[in-house]
Length: 370
Image (tube, one colour):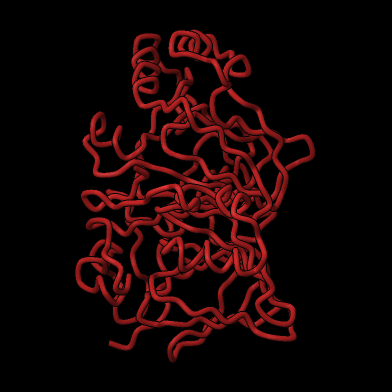
């Protein structure tokens, strides 16, 4: 088959916290009227799977492509299961998102009957001055105190409120309570999952009220899946110069995913080799992309999925793109950043599994820290 980058359908979520920033600020076209909270750029979530829109694979879901062409799509690295391992989104937090968490792998299997949890990262594309996010629980807070505060919606008494700035990224391990918004526009990369537990008295889909008994049960499940330890921090990422006018910034990395932001002027094109699937999302003006024998345009706030078999992508500048993938942490992230002069502590702060003292394994087809 003549392989080329895959254009996919993108499920749209019109949750109550959304607005029009994806259209008005990013320039995304083709969105429905009214508030738009999320576009799922690459999704293999059950019931929300992306579908290939053109070429020889047109009409196939991403799950079908995984089943029929696993090596061409992901390369020699074994897939973590039947699902494509990455879920990526543009999220418009014009309003505040609910305070919620996603289970980690262990809790997902124990409580959700799901094969994996949902560690995620947010890269901030835009945020109003003074914007903050809730990320993780304050030191010394126990289950009973956290329960009382969640029931009372006294979130600042127990959760860490952090400043949010455009260009920064935070890696959020599964089991970490969190929320962001209002006035926050992010690109999110995460494990393929839609499990969550949230603490609000309203539903994020339409704002309708949740009864007292149901909400109390939701909070108990949230507490069961809560991990007290993680206290993530926002950071600007670690940059390296690739060519004249071409910059690579590693925004975050862990056993489940890595996210990079690449920029290029007009002196040299952005050229990147790869041996596993890449998710290429455009954070800037339209660009020309070439891979294999294919050349095409990638519009504003649009995404291509690049199968591993293509091996290399070329983006003509000026360009500002995001690249997500499942990394070999030592080969793809740690070693090149150390060689570029970044210190071990700075590299380890990008996510999980980047410290030599950390052991990264893939038990039962799911990555986790031992």
